[in-house]
Image (tube, rainbow over all chains, first blue to last red; front, top):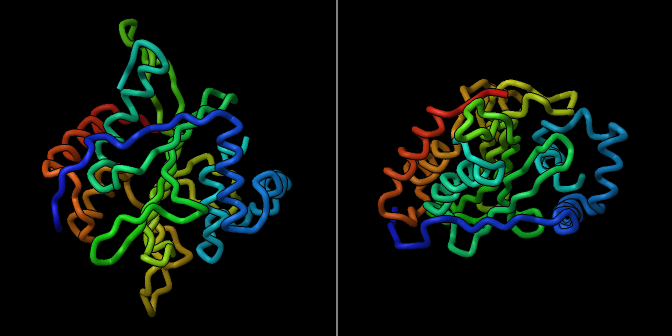
Length: 71
Length: 182
């Protein structure tokens, strides 16, 4: 384990609603190939209700964990 | 930790966590914060690019991401009337290829029908003959500080601050002193 000198606090960036939606969209497109809006629609339709904790579909759980970004 | 305003309470909550994250994150890393209009709920999250975790390096090349949900609630103290109440956490350690290796979860209000609502851990590693990959071994509530300590001390992630142990200990003590379950 090496020890180096770095900044003492990780930066914080507050997102606007548009920025949050864009960030969620980026994650959904990269992981599932669908838009953030489409993921949200499917989520609210209950399509993912049985696989939020499914290790075989980790992208669903990850997107569920950051769902507030999409709303 | 309480504050005189909601913004002050949020800063009192997030600043120590960001001090701890700076023990392992590259200086270019940024934590994102977002406030949800409904119910004054907030999200603090660390995300890599395009769905990838944030690489931490070390001999195993592990990655990390987190999501922490919280709300600002009355503190019951006229001098510092606001504090943060945690609502859920998701701390994920990945392999060098980005595959989830260990995940610490607490999401008592999850909308998922398959979700465990108690604090638990996901172990994706090979544990034959007992397959734990779809199980939810219970844990106590796990602090972010404890996860970062594990990353440094046991997974060999480089500590970016020489006094990381004291930083983590101090922040974790505040977590223990002020924690509230939702």
